[in-house]
Image 1 (cartoon, rainbow, N blue to C red):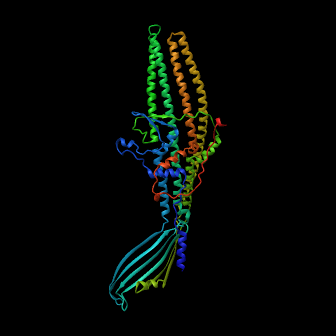
Image 2 (image 1 turned 120 degrees about the horizontal axis):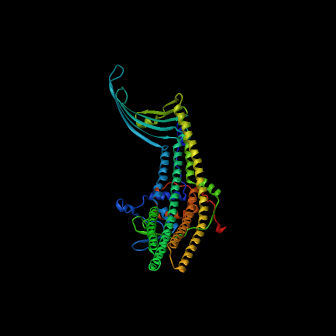
Image 3 (image 1 turned 30 degrees about the vertical axis):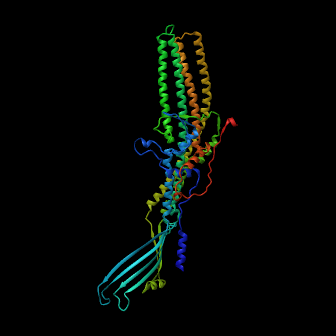
Length: 572
């Protein structure tokens, strides 16, 4: 009875240790589906097929044109395609699930282990005055179960049944049976004892998974921000190309006017002056076209979609008009949001948790080694198997041992404890440094938003003035009719300055939109602030579901993501 009570107590102390459940928020489900369906299907693994995706995900694109496809793409479609296909995100999508398997491995060390075996032994004894010569044979079958407990100890219940044949005895049957059952316990009392030390690996694995989730979120937010950046860069590149083509048309028109007056008052100086301006504009147009293709291919790489890939000859037309309405940024609200939601800061906080666990482990390892070992069991004999099992409670035996060990000075383990504490202090300092850098970035982005809007307003006035200047020069030209070299140079410069002022205005518009996205990324709220979680949901619906047998265990948990204050002045 006592042995049964002790066994039940050990089972209660041990028990199964779970790896832990997963918060089923949107990003976790999205990451899991990406990981289960990666890598992205491609047209092949060699040659040009390696560049051709063969999986179509994302919105229905407006594609026209036969020889050269024209794709009308708005910014939300671009983000959705990037969320569905971006390879940087897909690479990181594996890490959280890999970390979860490490959690399972850490918890598996506390699983029950069933063991068993068979042993055969043979012994020969020479004859003597007290014992006749003969031999003995033993067949032993043993089985049991053992477990490592979260307290650091191990217990095992072992049962064995032996058949013994011995012809060295007189007046008795040479065959006997022996049955044994024993409970073995080994428990450290100081070093290696307690759940703080023995569950450290599992706790670190759980925190590491959360770190990998934050890294996945950081890469996703970076990919989304980069997609938005390249989208507006492509919009600016196309606007710049249109400006360069407009400037080329102006200069060609000027050159034609000068050429028509070659027999009247236009000399070689004016003709070559206008011709040089035309040639310069033609070169600028070629460079602008190249820039459009360069930016477009960077965007295509981020989208990684079957319908718009690096192999096809296509033209992407941005259709979303840029935001130009003024916004008011509450810097304090932005800083609070960044301190709470920036993934880099969250990773740093989780690293502090890992450092704290390592310090606790080092404290435990600096203790003396004091181990308790015990064994209790029963033994029974009989002429048959049944008699041996019935007589199992005839003989009780037990042992108890206590062992201690402590190195003089204990320098190695105390040095490790000091090292772990220093690493924790360094991790805390890294969090403080990262927080200051994030604060600098947030405030800088807030100033950029304000500066870019003021630049938009200022450049609009410059454009209006330059256009008025160019119109006045054209009016003077129509009145005077004669183009002197000085007047011609003034007109050509005015055309350039008008196009340049317009380009600077468009650049400020692009920077204005990009800086708002970068501010949201720095605060860690770009998914909510730009409603990009709505872009993730269709991707979840389109990705095929993995087998239910491999899905991780989920638990409901609230998802608290703050949204910084960024109000449009137009609605105030």
